[in-house]
Amino acid sequence: MIVKQHLIFILYSLCASVFKVAGTKSKAKGSQGQFPITQNVTVVEGGTANMTCRVDYNDNTSLQWSNPAQQTLFFGDKKALRDHRIELVRASTQELTIRISDVSLSDEGQYTCSLFTMPVKTTKAFLTVLGVPGRPEITGFTKPAMEGDVITLTCTTPGSKPAANIRWFRNDKEVQGTKEVNATGKSFIVRSSLQFHVDRRDDGVAYTCSVEHVSLSNPYMTTEVLEVHYAPHLEIKKSLIIPQEGQYFKLECVSIGNPIPEPVLWSKDGGELPDIERMIVEGRELTITTLNKTDNGTYRCEASNHLGTGSAEYILFVYAKDFPGPTTDPNALGQHGPDHALIGGVVAVVVFITLCLIIVLGRYLARHKGTYLTHEAKGAEDAPDADTAIINAEGNHVHAEEKKEYFI
Image 1 (cartoon, rainbow, N blue to C red):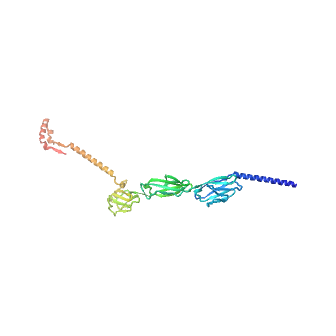
Image 2: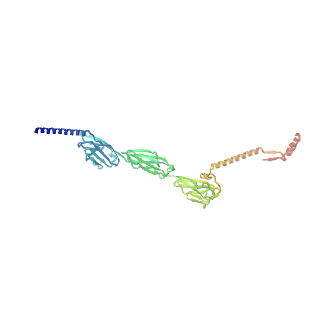
Image 3: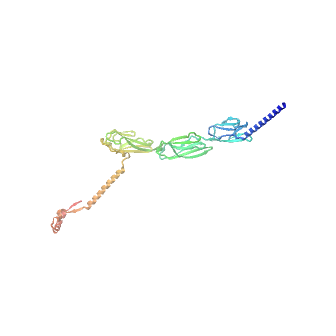
């Protein structure tokens, strides 16, 4: 009986040993057959990158991280490279995670996670570092610009990776520029140029350079406002459509120019204002307090800046107080001055017609110039017959010179 129990114990021990060895071999075989698992990481320059390496199961085999230069960063929980930016996040038999702070463009590359089995299993993970573009700067502005100038605006942004995109806006409308990209090490300098002829309509216009990049949540923008100097342009505005005697009348000289054309000078018919008591000048306005017929004439305003002089005219015609008024403003053409071409044409037609009449009348008078005999000189009409008429005609010719009349 004792021998039987002893045999059973020996058999049980042998079976346990066999199962233990088989389990150990199976576990070792599983550990040796797997590869570490990693993921590529993208980080903005200056940010933080977490590099994780893991396995599904492990039998105390060590994990290791190496940088693109194949320098060991961590072997298990042991730090191998003296870099204060690199620190351990988690280390276990199934995971090794490290953190790289204040990432620079030089940190970009292929990192290696190694599982130290026989043979060693490795997996790569690529760290991509995005270069943040610098704040854009606009050059080429001349303050002030002159109307007619050709200006080239250039927007520059350095340090982007990949190369940034630049867009131009004139106020809120996009305009196309010319792009140029230059590599500097691992980053890029991007420039965009905008060339145009300066017009007075560009005065006060905002030109905006917008930089877009994958590393930015919102574009970087910079804006410059263009100042344009140009010669004056003047226009006269009136307060009444039909000016009549006794009314209050105002003319305003509206000037456009940069710098603002000042002062505004008023004149009438090429000379000074004749009645300064009724004709009051206040800045750009001329006020006539009580209109009368003597106010008829051409009023002119003039203003200057350093680029030139501008002027405008208004022909005023004052109607009688009880005059019903025309359907349109008779003074409307006055702002543009009298139509000298029309007046000259009318005068030319009148002169031509007069000359034609004189020529026709002269030719008529020339054709009918001569003499005629009075009835007394003729005598033929009173003769009873032909013979007597001839005798009378011959006798009367003697006195013909005495009775001859002329007309011219």
